[in-house]
Length: 160
Image (cartoon, rainbow, N blue to C red):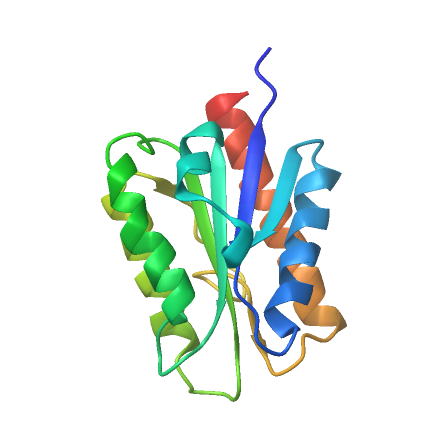
């Protein structure tokens, strides 16, 4: 049986998005799925085809992902067509309410849809992905873990 693998790529300026990345990874591991967490500076777009699921996290920066995350996504065009059917998800941390969390998540998800990836929303809180306003509190971190579990379950169904 194929060992399902998920990659989490994130950028973090204050450490908030990094904390979220590791909470998402905990949720993935709880479902028995292998996960690697990489800061965007250490990640290579050439690794993307090796994973069954890809989760991207970014702080909100002017209503969008950071330049490093945008650069990573732009560079991923070299693997266009090779990410078809992989599971994708996104998370973000913002400086305040109504400061662009949803636009940031949707821009990340749009890129994944263009790659042909499969995205699962949630009918609960945080429809488009986990969000933290400021430093993630216990509830935010649990939302991250739950997102990790949900992505892991979907990835196992599609690629296990």
